[in-house]
Each structure stands twice: as C-alpha cells, then as structure tokens.
Image (cartoon, rainbow over all chains, first blue to last red):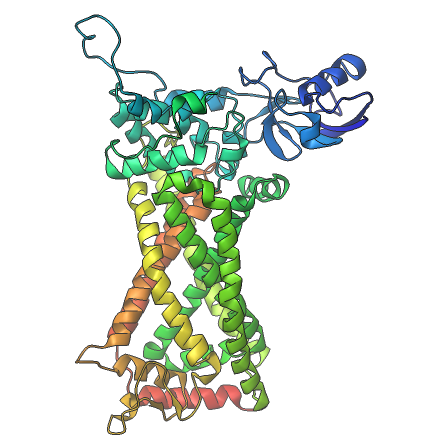
Amino acid sequence: MDIAFRIRRFNPEVQGKNKPYWQEFQLTDVEETDRVLELLHRVKWEQDGTLTLRRACAHGVCGSDAMRINGINRLACKVLVRDVGTKIQVEPILGLPVLKDLVVDMEPFFDHYRSVMPFFVNDTAVPTDGRERLQSQEDREKFDDTTKCILCAACTTSCPSFWANGQYVGPAAIVQAHRFIFDTRDQAWKERLEILGEPNGVWRCRTIYNCTPACPREIQVTKAIGEVKLAIRAGKREGIATPVGPIAESNS
Amino acid sequence: MTALVTTLTETMRYRGAIGQWSWVLHRVTGLGVVLFLTLHVIGVAYSVFYPGLWEEEVLIYQHPIFTIGEFVLTACVVYHALNGLRIAILDSRPHLWKFQKQAATYVLLGTIVLLIPTFIIMFGHVLNHYNESPTFVDIPTLINAMLRFAIGIAAAAALAVLASGLYGLIGGNQQDVTVGKGTGSRMERFWWSFMRISGVLIIPLVFGHLAIAHLVQGVFDLNMANATIGGVPIADAGAILANGINNSGTAVEYVAERWNFLIAGVALWRIYDAALLALVTVHGFNGLRYVVTDYTMSSPLMRRAATYLCFIGGVALLVVGVLALLGTIDTTAVQLAEEAKAHFLSVP
C-alpha cells in the first residue's frame, strides 16, 4: 500500500524554514497494521533525516509522541494506518510553543501540572502496624480512571479554551488533580480545590468534550473535570465521584 | 486578537465532534441574543422616556431586514435554550457524558422540530402584513436608529478601555493569573452556578415571551389599530390604556396595555418582564464576559476592559429597564407615539 504523507515542518534556525510549512512525502510498501510512528521513522531514516519528532517507548506508555494526526490529537505510536487511511496529515499539538517540526515545548504544560499539587499528601502518623494506609475497593475505584494519565498533553491541546488561553490550567492538570482529590487517603484536597477554583482553573472548561476522545488512555476526561467542578461548588468531595467501572475490568 | 483568530481557524481545522460544534453554535447564538437584548431593552424603555423612539423602533422591527433578523433571533433563542439545558444537565451529572453526542443531536433535532411550526406561524404574520401593501421606514431612518446603538456600544467600549488603562497606570499590569498563584477572584464558582440555574429559569420565561410577541401577536400587530393585546383580556369598562385593545394603534399603547393590566392588583406583565430582564441581562452579559475574556487573556488591558464592558453594559441595561418598568405611560405618550408613527410612515 502507498501512503501520501503531509507533515507540518518548522525549523527556527534555517532561513526559509523558520515559518511553519507543509511538506509531502510518499511511502511505498506500507502495511495497514503499521503504526504512524513507524511511518514517521521511515520518512526520517529513508528520506529526510532532519525531520524532528519526540518519542521514547513507542508503545503508548511514555506519552511523548502526541501529535495531531488527520485533525485529531493522538499518539503516533498507537494509531495504525488502517485507522487513518492512506492520506495522513501530521502536525504538532496546538497551544504549546513549537520548537522544531513536531516537537513542542512541554514546559508550560508541566507548569500547569505542577500547580495542582500532583502528589500524595498525608502528614498523619503511619498506621500502628507500620504498613500501608488502607482504603476500600469502592473508594479506590472512584479515582482509578484518572490514575491512568501519561501526561501526553493530547487532551489539553485539543481544548479550544486552552488554544485561546494558555493560562488555563487545562484538562490534563485537572485529571491529575482529580486523582488525588478523590483519594480518601489524601489530605490536600481542599487546597487543590482552592487552586482549581481560580478563574483559570476548572471554570474555563466549557464542556466541549474535545478532550475525552483525544485521550489515548481512554480516560473520561470531561467527566473528571465535571466532578472537580461539583466538588468545588459543594466544598466537599464525598458523594461526587462515580467509579468508571470495577478496577479489574477497566484496567484489562 | 491572535487568540481569537487561532481559535476560529483551528476550530475549523480540528476534527472535534458534535460537542465542539455545539459550543461554537452556543457562543454564536448567545452573542446574537445579547446584541438584540441590548436593542430591545433600550427600545422598550423608550416607550416610557421617548415614546416616539419606541414607535420608530417597532417600525424598524417590521422592516424586511429585521424580519429576517427576527427569524434568525428566534432560531438563536431556541437553540441556545435547548443546548444550554443539555450543558446544565451534563454539568450537574458528569457521568452522563456518554450521552453527550446523542444529546447534542437531540438538541439540533429539537431545535428544528420547534422551529418548523414557529416559522410557519411567523411567516403567516409576514404574509398577512405584506398582503396589506404596507409602508416601511426608509433605510436612512433605519441606519440612523442603529447608529445610535452603535455609538452607545462604542462609547461603553471606549469607557471600559479607558477605565482599564487607568487601572493599569495606577494598580499596575503585573497581576499573575496563572493557576496556583492564589490571585484572581473566587466569584467564578458563583457565576458557574448562576449561569446554569438562571439559564434553566429563563427557558419558560423566554419561550412565553416569544410565543406572545412573535406567535400569538406577531411583531406586525404590535402597532395595529384596534388589535387585541396578547396576554391582556378585553375590558370594555377599562381605561383607554387598560382595556385590552390597542385603540391608537401604537406600539407605545401596546406596552402600556400590558404593563397596566392588573390581576388581583398585581401588574403581572411588569413582574414577568422584570424577571426576564434581570435574569437574561445578567446571564447574557456574564456570558459575553466569558466569551470576550477567553480571547483577551494575553493582554491585561483588554482583559480588564472586557470585564468592565460587560459590567457597564449589564448595569446600564438593568437600570434603564428597571426605571422603565417602574415608569408610567400616559395618553400624552401615546399621542407622541401616534405623531411619530405618522411621521415615519409618511410618504415623502
């Protein structure tokens, strides 16, 4: 099978390439089970070594190769040719500064991530038996979905509110906050709700639902954001988050 | 501006599903309704303060250009109402997200289903009117009247930018609005709830209002001589401005009849209009603030100006509207209206 590739290029250091432009590549002998990442590799290795992209594990775990493929944010390593057809258009995710070709500066994204205290907080003494803090299966299920985030930024950069306003904390940071807010063992949930209650916190979300299908981990992103909003409104976290499903099932 | 341009072009390019397009439509229809709300509240208030201008305004509403606008406006209100209901439900029950696409489709279908009979009835009013070979206000009059609003809006915008500039000079432009810095108001929580609650409350009120002014009565009947008044029973013994009949055939008397109608001593339509005014104005101008501030975040000057403009606009409409609702319309006002109507419809 032959593939027509259209790739958004940008190189700030080279005259004539320092404005974003489209470049086309043709690939032959492509299998429909090839991943888009493999095709990008073939372009880089066989046709143009200057093509720049970010990837590490190549198996949908590290979250480094989020890009806009045929108009939708996805991981290049999780999309097969048969999912997108023989004409493939690839461009960097939107809303973060493009450094070169498909590589964007993730620092603003991580700044938002850090702003929601994405770590476990519990200053009470450890249980007397010296072992772990126990939690019921039901309580664990309430935030199971949001533990799956790999910080690829596909959701945040699919959000029109984020495109317009890079100071909006964005879906991914809210998902990460959700994971701790609804963890019964965590004690900093009030601070996180306070942070996300700021004007550029959850309230910039207009319930557009671009983020949910953009997530390569199938996290129910808009639902998680909605639950954080309700928790801020209610000033409590009990009785708000609903489990996506039994853990064993949702992780299989 | 870059933020707005980026969002517009990229929304066209990003293959977001129906949810994204629902959001676009929600914003566009909302902006349309706020614009008309501004004309309309000031227009009705004219009936108390400058009766001739309200008469002119209704004649302008009857102009073919505004007849097209009336259909567009009705579509905007219906879509915004149904989609707003969808958002309010999904926001209060996040786990229902799986039905959001279906819901968005139902909103579109529901809009069409509601609009078909509505448009048929409205078109009937249009045909009736055109059968009587009507005269319309001329284009210069129309432009002149709209210019007044444009100047008013531009003045409010200039005032907002000026105030924001002054604030920047005195208070500085350095406010850090990134999340986690502890700055920024905590009012957004209130506004978020307000938009959803007020939106749901507005739906029955605005549908009732549309039904009376566009279906039962029709815009062309507002200044029709001896027409009955929608929502006001005929009282033969009543005073001339409270007998349920538009004796003078003026839009000013139409308003007077409705506002003078008492049921058990209560001015039903004044209260109805007051509720509509308060809810729609606050909802509309806060919605406007959402839209404008979304695209002005990179400039502290414009961001503040956007908020000020919405505040100025909302408060101005509330004040004008409330003063009008508390005012009285007497026979002198109706006389002025009659003269104005004759003047605007006189063939040169």
